[in-house]
Length: 314
Image (cartoon, rainbow, N blue to C red):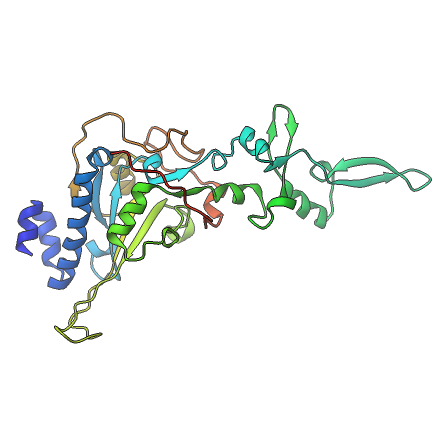
């Protein structure tokens, strides 16, 4: 372990924290950090200006796992997405995700019982419950003065509403997938969770993160399934809210959440490296100052059918 400590050049605060842990626990943490630092050396442009931190209860005692997080990556380096995810009206119309309202209800009849006034579901005033439910599922967007419905007949097998459908069009980036392979045994991208889950704060606040649970056990030499020492898992996260490093630290302090810096990479450029040239989504602050805002996409399930392959531009 001393070799690790010398190699990383940790300060006294980090050393003091590690010394409070068991030897096996400290080795597990240092092994994880070594992999991250080796990966960052091969991807320096992405990591410039970023930070690696320990957060949470492992700093204060009585913990079930050790929370480690990478902070400062641009959202467009962490998450891959397309124009459907951005809810671009032109793209949604072209792909027939949005269609002009075509389900009509009879709201009046003439004296012969023939329909007199027809209105789209989304335009009916004072609808009953079933009509309201129908209208909710069809709710779409207005574009160039025309109201469009979500094409629920075609895409109901994907999602019951437009927001849910569009949320499926985001995936872990190639950088995130490579990190997953580095730290987590399964290589299936679906083992990565959505970055839109409620994480902490009793569901009141959310962090957007990709998480990699890293298990480890110290076994008796040569004895299968024997446990010499219990080693708590590491909950490793890539923060995905686009925050700059210093802004993340300011938000941590404002929320009263402890953190300990393991590594802070020097900033070599004002612009962070990205993978996609698309705009940031509506819930992200492009300047990296404000946290992600509450958005209905946070509450949509995220199980991509296929993850697009895009190379890491190193």
